Image 1 (tube, rainbow, N blue to C red):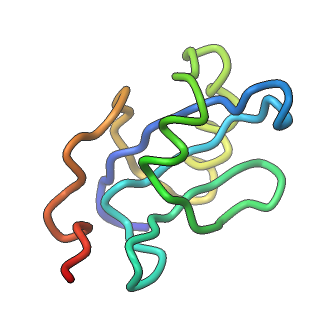
Image 2 (cartoon, rainbow, N blue to C red):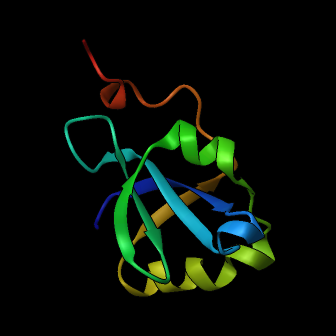
Length: 95
């Protein structure tokens, strides 16, 4: 990935594994409104941004540091934000 993108790091509840997830709100995954996400296990995948924000809590820098390192090692350039609302205009689904 050559352009700088925004990333939001979140943590799933312990009941759902407690893993850190990286959300890329401006990077589409499909044409149905899903965005790109990344986790250590499973790596790239689709995410419903509002759902993930509701189901998770913000990750601390110490919690997301390993995932941040991994993403930078595979070529991502990004700016860390705590959240992104509203979603970038190009991600809003039109009826």
